[in-house]
Image (cartoon, rainbow, N blue to C red; front, side, top):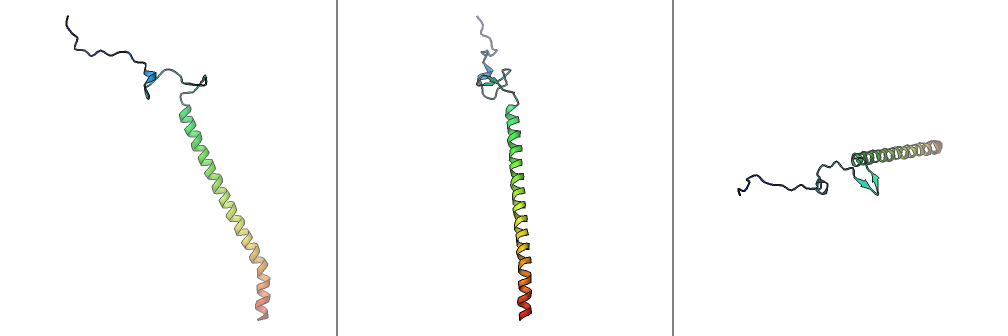
Length: 89
């Protein structure tokens, strides 16, 4: 009997190989997951991070505005006192 020079491969369950393509929809707690759920989750996480940064930037700008307004009000309150002191000298 002649041995074949062609390599023989056993059929493998491709779903057990990490990173291999699969036609099976993954499930978590018996709930079918969308194949794009990972990329969608990453997109949502990115959008959340951007929204948090925007809120932080807005809060900082509002804080600076309030500090500037307070400084102006204090200067306005002090202006008449400074004028009286200068006039007295």
